[in-house]
Length: 199
Length: 365
Image 1 (tube, rainbow over the protein chains, first blue to last red):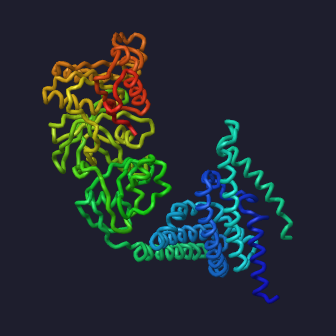
Image 2: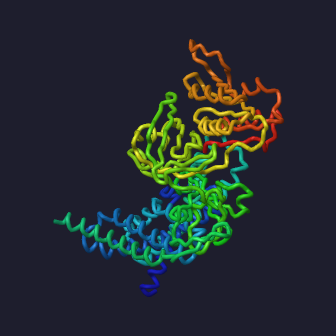
Image 3: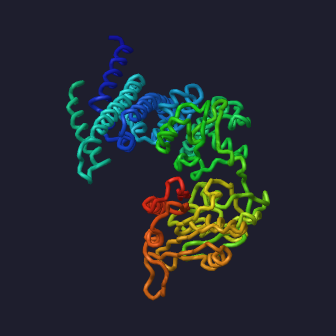
């Protein structure tokens, strides 16, 4: 297999790993606040999830470029927290402006979630993991996309469960966030079952 | 040296990104000028890209809003007939079923992207912004004050007793944002150069804290109004007024009007307070009682303090209504106050046979 093909293969594996075995939400519990607060309905959860997939894919890629072409040559790696956050915020602002102008329909479904995502720790988390795990560029894209899809999958599953929970009799003290966290824990256990699938 | 360079580089990157955003805003978020058709007859042209609420405000058309456009109060409703796009998830929680299907939108959430056609109540065209000066602050009770504002520009106002105005509460230490808050006008409508408001201190309230702790006599502030359709009907039906706390404000104005027009209409005013310390304006009410032949003022204290010597009505204000009336089918009911008090009073009115459409109220949001 040539080297580009090998890299693409690695990216695909990384992507699958990010969706299932290393799901950013269920293994590191990042991005919990939107996960608990916006998972009441499948429709809104899907909107938020789609926005996360989009933003995560692009910001990890942008941050990879900024990290390896600006911070590493200048030996300013310790600035990555600051730089990543700034890039994420600027990117989200920019995208919001563009889709607001050119695609009102997309803005309708994604727009109001975009500003929320700027402060989603999973987005920054993905960029930081990308550095810690020393991914190459194509892998990073796979990882960013996979993490986003993993997050989307988790919040969709949670929203589906919570819609059914409306009819369940939950003890008073556990209603709302309480039962959501317990379910998230059970889901995380289920996802642990994927470990080892991809070696 | 290293530190300096790193600071420079990070600032440089941030500045670069900011520049990109500014340029993008200039070219991408440029919607050109858009035409807004009001009630099918008046047209205004505004710069697109901003929320409808602020675009209208710039054209001196004031839609009432309490939160100042952040989509949290749900007050700034208008009918958008054309060009508003689909309703946003940020608006749906504030809308009733009829409003959802009737093109009603929150004007702070609708962005002017293209030509719009909207419908607003005619009376809003009369709403103006007034520069005013606070000329008098009077303690009414331990937590209520009466503020008197002299209008400086424009110098006079026309309003109907029962209407309200909005105070633009500026930023101050402890509140980082401008908010608008509505207060009923408590002065005589024929006294066109001033408006008075009765404000009760709300613990941690943004605007009331400002009014009580920062606003001083001589300070200037901005009011807009008049808003609202709470007013007396033009019938001769006997009336029952029920209020508590600062809900008294519109009734002071209404009683002024009744006095000015020499009204003979029968009216009984139940004013509820927790203790005798909550009662106020007794002298002014006595004056109205003397001037209006068929007006009765009935303060009701739910828990009179020991030794206060209170001999008037006691218990809840709604109980006092029930004690005085066995049935109210021919009466009109007027209410102003907290949602809890209003709902309780409406229940009692209906129990006593008052038709629902004869009950008029001004609920504090």
